[in-house]
View 1: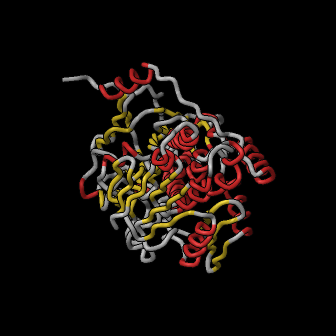
View 2 (view 1 turned 90 degrees about the vertical axis):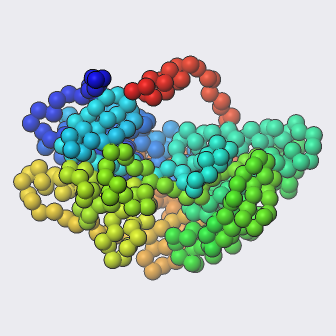
View 3 (view 1 turned 180 degrees about the vertical axis):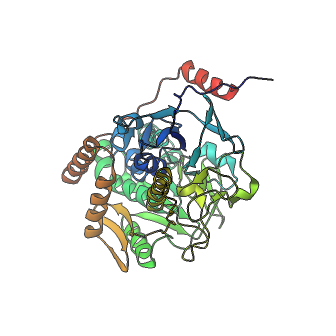
Length: 443
């Protein structure tokens, strides 16, 4: 029988150990709010930093540096006692033993918090995963940036009109906030930045297609916001295909459900998300891929396991019978409530607070001087909504240096109609990465 490798983490002593899987909105907020007096916290994540996902599209369109929307986990918790970060993969949980299997060994826990978020949903078409560009991480945003810039570099040299068409046509699949914001950013670049960088190209030939399977854009927002977003994008030259799914992408043709084909080498798939679960829990713990929790975010089938954020499903809220929206505010509020309950439990206070979601509104930007806002019963768009969007996002970024950096980049871009990060950086391949991947697969 193979001996199990035990992860090298200090003994918690007389403290309970909380293991948090995922360092996104939900996981990071939980870690911040947990009282170190009572708990040892172990935060595990695939990367060693937090990434502010709402602004990934700006990294992809050369508007922001990746470091401006990322913050190291260890720096966040410099002053925390008995707090440990491990960059590894969570592989399986053994609930009966209260053991988590990871790529660095097993970790025992008293409480396990699953905050694994979501990944891109390709709806069973694995070919799309290999042929399109996603936007759920900084590495994917940098890859998308390379693809965008490479298309214009290549367009300078092609001799056939068909190849030029492929390179100057951009297809964004998905009409949610990311799809709308990416389309708007590309439209801004087409008008202001790209003609200065590539004066040899005729940008009247550049096309931006936004394909959405839903009957309206920004389906999670009000109908007023949807209509305003669609109208603004159309005025900026974006071609919108609504209520039409994508069947396939056989390069260079994007095949739509209405038999239309769009010729493009630049296809960005932001058309849906799927929750990241965890192997080892009962099949009864899942519904539609999400982990079922009670009003305290406890996984009902397993003692000591909690799920929060995008990956969980709380169905006994009359306002949200199909579960809460998979947005940052839900994740943050769940995290605060769970941490409060765990802290109270450690203090001997058996009072538990049920999770009640407070909807604070939604914002989405469509480009320069254009955004839409749903704030309670108010629905508005335009410049005021855009400035509000800017302010809210600057406040939400972690780290004062990052806030200042983003603010300066935005002010500079607004004044000069320019972005200064149009760098095509291709990483040098090295066997070190293959060795690391191989060792993790072998465990």
